[in-house]
Image (cartoon, rainbow, N blue to C red; front, side):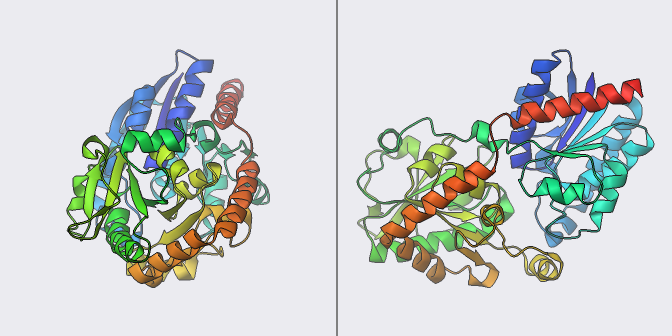
Length: 399
């Protein structure tokens, strides 16, 4: 079997790699080509293009990346015309993927969508296009199955794939030992996102908030799990009044630089879940990380900031009451959300200090996050999705 897979973002790379592994375990001779990241390539994907060529967020940002996106589209559709794979697997990233799906449909290629576009949140009119183009869909959020079924689509809730991968390999004490952090002092995780655009908008504000936090609580320590695809130099390029320290040169430093009273932000790579699990709370970009933190039962404060034009359009198009997935799954405002103009150092430091001081509030949040984790289903999402994909191909061949 020949499969073409497209994942345009870091989270899609993770889920795509799990799906590739699951398909290979069931059909070892399957060949995979497509657009993905390092995890998918490691799983066996032959890269047509790296997903980094497509990893942008927001309307304004996409406008600035039209040329590489068009190039990727042309190369992808040319490959599909020439090779005619047995299956096209699309993972999220709807603006690009739906255009590719339209071409694949004309070529008679079966289309399997794993991790659906969030059309329930905005531009619900796209569901008609999905119904016309997509043969089968596997969704990962508990409320999505009923939504798509109500629109006449073949859809199955398979559970969330994060349940298979999100776990900490170390205890808090072991993580602190490895990173030179004092386990007896509070730890605040800073998670400004996995894309350069997100980081450029959120990290400088988080860094300034850290300065405000240590003025009130000098015992607080900061840890920042950096995406494997990024270099810590990107953080230093913002010239914030902080000290960036990687775990390789961390030693046994104190949480602040006594000579300047600047906060030290300990940067770790390859230990994202360990850093989140060890934190008393995290300050995070909205997105997949909010569900990762929920699975690890780590209290959080969510931030959301995009370009002004993206936010302006979003306010008029988005039909859901929350910015974070964790609140959407919970069905209520479980964790604080700080949005757009409210994302200031003063507001962030105030929210962090308030939650740090509220032990009961953090424990209650942890208990509610466990309920969110349970709502995400059970482990084995990729294996169940692989079964659906194989059924689709088998059904197409016998039709």
